Length: 157
Image 1 (cartoon, one colour):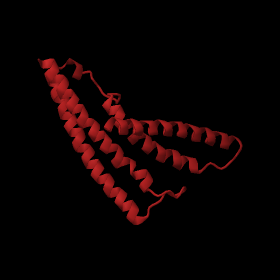
Image 2 (cartoon, helix red, strand yellow):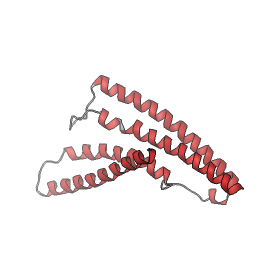
Image 3 (cartoon, helix red, strand yellow):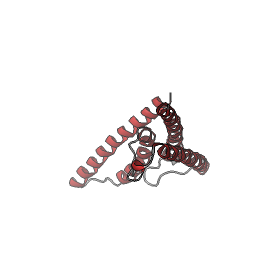
Image 4 (cartoon, helix red, strand yellow):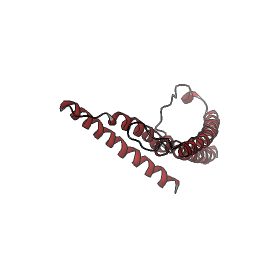
């Protein structure tokens, strides 16, 4: 079930990247014909937030995030395992804090009736990406800890 949610959220991120590309092409074409495209900057900036949080869980799950293994690769397997577990636990704690704060931000947006300046889109539609994406990231971190533990135990025998 988690993989389905994570993959679906990732596909949403990919579709949003394509949409942002089309919006940028529209903005360029609009400048050539001197048409007003003032709303595209706000739209693309908010979509980039969604893209980031939509693609984060799958990228983390598949190890496609930015990392530096210069020192890590030279450590023993046991130390690598310990660091993986430690970083996974830190990731879970961080994502729990961000989910909690993201929910508080979303509640404030609903209560205050916040909307974007140009498009007048309710801010809840933008801010909800934060707790949802980080919840899936936390689940991906927990899944990675479990899979790494199983892998370590199998290789230790």
